[in-house]
Every structure is written in structure tokens, then in C-alpha cells.
Image 1: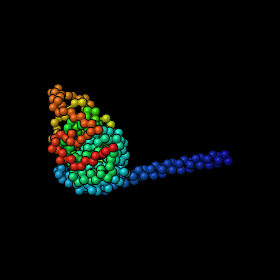
Image 2 (image 1 turned 120 degrees about the vertical axis):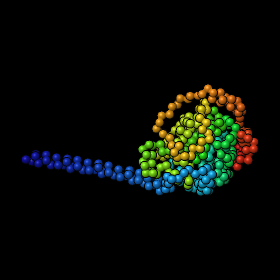
Image 3 (image 1 turned 180 degrees about the vertical axis):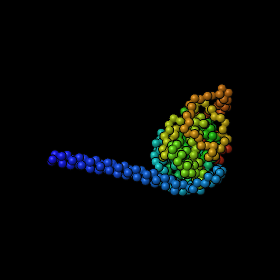
Length: 351
């Protein structure tokens, strides 16, 4: 009799222990689920709160309007972006992607000069910026921090033919492709001024890479936000990888961060320039610039013989300029002598 009672007692203890264990498991599971939902909800709230209300009826603004936006933002641009870029690890991406850059370097869309402090091994930095107010901020920053290399600020648009071919060892860009008006023409100019073994280092804002997240935001009519270019001057749904490939660059390094919206890239020149003469097409329409990023892009290069002949003729006409970092003179690399008026500021570092 006592044995039976003891067995029943043991069974009850096992049952209670099992019940409590399962209950604890579900409590933990519920807690983890609630925590994840809270984090996602908080991120979604912050994402929505810090963006203007979308207006799908808006057309794209013209370039002059967007330049005025950058002029307006210039004085407080660093202050507003310091905290955001810290918590989103943009500073870390700059440090890692730009630390190995050497030689004579071109920066397109230099803005307020947020990349200068991350360039440690540069000999000469040539900055191209179209916004005059941004040029002022950049000039003041250069004069204040006095970097250990010469810095030249050119107030111009990179879509214009500013420099002679084959000048720069490397080109850098951060959040510039999303702001250019004539993307293809600008990229072809970058291609031409880079040396054959040069590299193009980019940190770019782009179309949300993760298909599911993009689909959800599109269904909620939060993305793409057509008011972004009207308030901040850039487009948020361009695809930098396709833009580079379509302009004869090969991607040799790619990391996509921040929910798929930040692209950390390194590209190099393809051997043959095989663009399709799209130089004068402005990529500023939300309907024509959104790519199918899930398609497979062939790496095969089909080069037309006539195009090869034309490329060779062009190269024979354009004298390849050899510029030494030791006796660098900004006037030697300008495409036309009268473009000297575009030099906004020169900071000459003397060892």
C-alpha cells in the first residue's frame, strides 16, 4: 500500500515539475517574443517619426531646387548627422572602407568634408562639390583641422569634364550617387579620370536590399518616400550596384548594412568601356530607377569591335597625364586652363 502511494506521489511530483518547466519555457518564449516585437515596434516608430509624411502625388524636384536644399542644410549638416551616423555605425563603415586609400584622390560630392578625418594615407585630396554653402563649410573645416595632405576644393558638377584623363589613384564617395542628377554622365567622367588600376570606394544610400522588408514598407506606403528629395535633396531608392555595373565598373567588395539600405562598396574599372550612351539621361524618376535587384546579372562582357576601335582612337587623342604627388599642381590636371576659376580653395600642406 505504501509503495503504491509512494509511486503516485512520485508521479505527481514529476507531473508538477514538468508542468512548471513547460510553463517557464513558454514564459521565456513569450518574454523573448515580446522583447523582439518591442524592438521592432520601436524601430518602426522611430523610422516613421523621423521621416516626412509621404505624398505620392509629388513629382521629382529639379536640380536647382535640390542644390538650394543642400545650401540651406550646410551650416547645421554636421551637427544633425553626427549622432545619427554614430548610432547607425556609418562612422565605422567610413573608417574601415577608407583607411587603405592612398595617392592622389578625388572625392565627388564632398559636402561638408565628413570623410577627411578618415583619410590617413592620402597624398593629395581633390574635392568636387556643387553647393557653394557646402564648399564654405568644407573650406573652414580644412583650415581648422589642417590635414597632413594638400586639399583642393573645386566648386563644380562632376558631370562636367573637369579633369584630364587617368589622373587619380582612387576616387571616394559617400552618399553622393543618391543625389546626382545626371548619374551616367557623372560616372563616365569618374571612369575616365581614374587610373587603370584605380579603385572607387563608396558608402552609399540605396534601395532597401531585403525584399520582404521592402515589400512591407511599400504596402504601408512608407517607401519610397517621394517627399525625401523635396526635404533632404536625395533619392532613397536608387540601386548603386546596378548604377556602377551599367557604367562599366566591376564590384570587388560589397557589404550591405542597416536593414539593407546602406551599401559599402569598392569598384574597379572594367577593361573596355561598354556603356550604351546613356550619359544624358537624368536618373531622377522613381518609376524608372527602381531595379529588379533579385535578377542574376551576367558577368560576361560582349565588346563590339567597332567600339573597341573608337575607344582606341579616343585614347590616342587624349594624352594620358602623368602627375607626380611630389610636384602636384592642380592646374596641371584641369581639362581646360580657364577652369582655374572653379578652384574654390587650396590648402597646401608642406612637410
